[in-house]
Image (cartoon, rainbow, N blue to C red; front, side, top):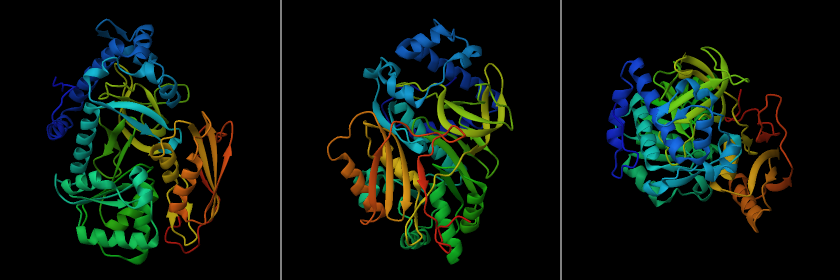
Length: 453
């Protein structure tokens, strides 16, 4: 078995990418065997170096000395966002001094921001996975592509910074701001695509849907595009249909999160998302924690096999999915997801009919603002010019923090927008058991190109 040094210091991304291509061309049985060995390797590391898992893996009988019993893997308690906050120090590896590690903040659709540690191996393998999936979509390294994306705090000020500009130039990438989809900007984005002639476009699912509706409504002709890659949102059938019609190409979905990276992707449009089994181990479980079989829907649990700085094991990612293909031995796992289910976050509506994806607000408060004092939020658009932000806090807001949030959101929604804050003890759950973090009470204009039919 080929194992890469998790402390490697040179740039290994091209080599990793070539290896991943070769790995995913192997027979499934060989892929599965190596995945199990990599899971065992991670568990040994966690049992030796991570205080939380040192106790858990011994108590459950999963690791005894150097022996790993994967048949007992499901006995390991699930990891939650709350545990990432409350057990942060206990989840760190004792050997951080020998690793190139960094902090990363996660907000995502859950609305519950957390901070975690990741290392160079995780980062580089994540980049390699992205390049591999681009190749599945039809892009060779260096060919032009467009990314309709967001970039933390920079989206609020109209620039993405010189480092990102340099990275975009080197990668032949043109960056478009997905957090501002006014009619004027979508018109400009269509012109950029006509000029750049990208071989693929990568975008938030919600954002490319908005742009596709505009392109279809205006009957804009675009150059040939090989594929559109979507992520950071649920790719519903109506989104895939609209985007396919606008760009006249397959739409491939990729799935992941900031906590564990990308861990599944489509190779053929609509054929299900293949789990990236070299880097991740995925389970789908029902309400009782029992494994779901093909065709069954349940909660997604992810074990990341590349982050040794803070091992993420059986992490409840907060999404639901339908199993496409699974195995039962030595412990149940998923090899393909038929689809990722879930709801698209409500989009907020401007008076001119353009929209701001609801995920922007969760993303801003959870990732860009990086507020240690802010535990949960619910953001409600009451009118075109009125926003209410409900907050569950861990500590009083620092001086000036609320005004910073207010002024930042006004840059996006307009200076006339009134932003009010309400401090609450909790945010009630929906009947499904999930939280709803963004709510728009505003109807879209009937002829808006952004309106959902």
